[in-house]
Image (cartoon, rainbow, N blue to C red):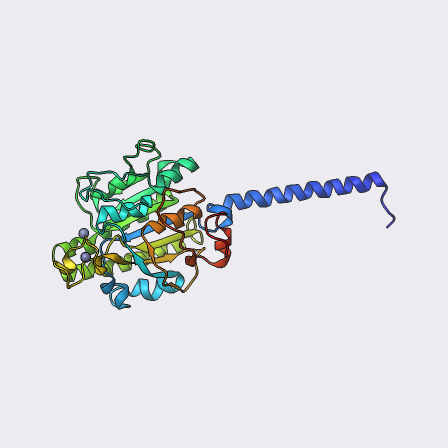
Length: 339
Ligand SMILES: [Zn+2]
Ligand SMILES: [Zn+2]
């Protein structure tokens, strides 16, 4: 082949340059289209499951025990935090508020007081401009509808998530967890939200009633429901391979040596403080076991950068040991110290 005349060479180079731009743009936009999370993380959806008021000694401290699904089937697929704690106020509304707002605050436990600060769900809804149906709170306890709003003057009644709490909203009473699971699956299938916080109440409810057998049964049912939820997320075309599931509890229960024992909770005894976190999803390590101390407020600090939102109000820290090395590198700059 003879050499091309100069102007043709330039034209060829021009076309190659154009093709390069087109290809790069396509690549970038396909990343943007698939990467719901920041910087190319695989997570596009985050679901937080709170199993209310289970003590470490009846769950992760006695495996497989009554949690064979979580401890044998789910745990190898994710990373477990063995030193996870409620270091704030060890009752339902405060524990859940610490999860959603990233701030530990004392708050009325009967559902008459909204959190002082907005939740990461509100911030995410506002920053993405998504409709209310993209973020849900689905709870067995009706009083947890307070998680949907805040007293903060800049945020009250703004960018509110959808609610499905109790039998039929605040004041309607607690709903059986089996029915809450049905609602969860229904919402996931029909609304396909990106964010959801779930509360199962049976262990806590039956413990307060002094019914040990049903307290333990509540734990074992929650274990089964957690597996059913994870299986759904693995099979569903919309959620598979791009959904993070965090399974935790809001508080434990008194040690047997504390007055009231397993029936009650609410102080700073080790039984109330020691809880657990199992983290599953495409950006987390498989078979990981973390002994670093983390607390409830670290959940929002970890989830926010995964969703690409700034959440500086959170008192928590990013739980960096949860992530695969690749995903850790993809968290937004400044989120975690460079290793
Ligand atoms: Zn309770
Ligand atoms: Zn206690």
